Length: 214
Image (cartoon, rainbow, N blue to C red):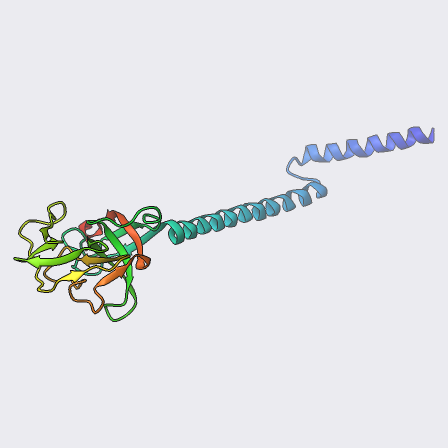
């Protein structure tokens, strides 16, 4: 009988609670309130952790790409016009010369202190290791033969210089495309750039100079 009374009391309490909930549908049990309050906080922390994880992965990927594979450069002067205009950005391949050597006509980014302070410059490869670079009638000659530069220069461009240069092994002779104002191998104290100082080969140019605010 006592067990039956207990069962009756439990049912009565449940029925009472159900009646109260029916009268006030918006009311929630205390235990449910606590559970609902905790769940959003846990989800927010999880979401924040995922977002931060994505940011870290993106930053790490960018560091790897630009430190080991890609080199960006901004053009600050007119020395490579009309190929590279002021405000343009160059995209260079850091690994371009791991398996092959620079070729004549390549645009390369290299380390130099010829401008008075260490910096990265961009010029065009003209003289290869062991070659003799000379100038006749304001045109470039390689080993006594006129150099065809029609692929990147107008025929009217003149290259003024009275000296003759013999390029050492593992080194290169560089000229800017804007021969009238380019400060390059013709005028440097050390006219040659070693292969170790070449940082990347330009393979793409972003023509920011075409944007209206430049």
